[in-house]
Image (tube, rainbow, N blue to C red; front, side, top):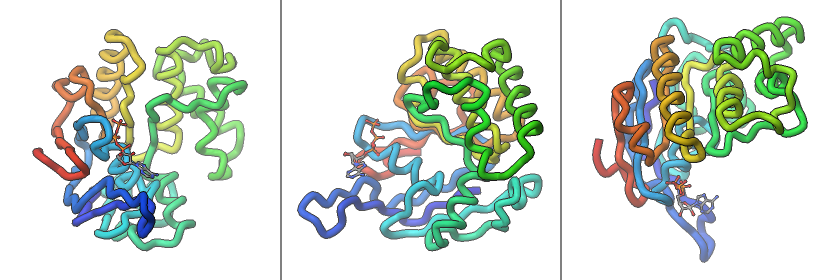
Length: 238
Ligand SMILES: Nc1ncnc2c1ncn2[C@@H]1O[C@H](COP(=O)(O)OP(=O)(O)OP(=O)(O)O)[C@@H](O)[C@H]1O
């Protein structure tokens, strides 16, 4: 469903500090599967994830998205599938919002705001009636067993609760693809194992999942369909 062809990403092009973080990567991410990008620190995993998730544009190469039938025009982005590389920013923003749910390394929840509001945030631009959105956000918190914390400010939540709020937030727009960057880096073993269980549940619901991780608890888990090894910005082994 996501196809990268000879994708390169160079930062600070033409300047003395020019740096190519991703080099000539061709990769197909299959729908409904869990793929892990594994590699040492600085190998280009986060950069590659940001390209896959349409958060950054490649310097060279092409990225194509195609949707399974049930994900056609997901959530109303209006994009029927095709090459995204040179689409104007406003289209990319819509595709990003409706196709991808992001789980960041430090989870990036908004402090001073309740768990429920944090989950609702990525859906505000869709203009859905507040009551309906609140209901959906509440259901997601319930799914992850933290409905009781819905009104708590995230500042006071435990690590595991924060993790679950972040996962619920990634799911609020019912994206076809979940992208997670080192999701277990700040979790103890038990929470990391719980994260892997949640992954299995998401895969069961038909989500496509792409994770950057160098945590063996993640990349060696039975739920993982494919490990893509990255080194020096290139695909070393699949
Ligand atoms: N915006 C940027 N400008 C310049 N260089 C960058 C930028 N973003 C990333 N880089 C460089 O690209 C390389 C790859 O970074 P990236 O974050 O993709 O690696 P990573 O494999 O995810 O690392 P980690 O596991 O430590 O998160 C690094 O050397 C980094 O310094």
